Length: 165
DNA sequence: GCCAACGTTGGC
DNA sequence: GCCAACGTTGGC
Image (cartoon, rainbow, N blue to C red):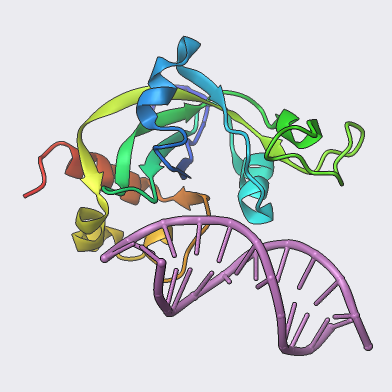
């Protein structure tokens, strides 16, 4: 085998309500990059703070909308750093318990990576045997950021290559 | 708008 | 540390 760095890529899934921030919105940002602000759940924060690496790939999932499902692929584009919205009293994500010295909420920048040929709807995710253990398909799951296995990621990209039907 | 399910808060 | 109450999420 040729010498190379052993560098594993991890896979993730990020939920967003497309009315608030969609995959198309991300793509339209300068450089296709956006700080993923507003996460106010400790488990989701910990994934960003402790487990993500620059270059990891993430599925962009549209939730709470007429056609929930995976809309595209993005890439983790920064190390974790404090979410600036926690410090701004005027911001809807302001947290009075957070200080610049002791921030509570952490984010990463994400960047548009690639479009998928077809949106992969929730019904198709649920119908795919390779995804039966997928985190977001488990009953009651509400986490906005979840890990995805390489096999799950591949299965979803494969589904995206064909239209629903 | 409904409701199941879950995370967080706060009284004790 | 328990647990009831509350707020939020997200599919339908």
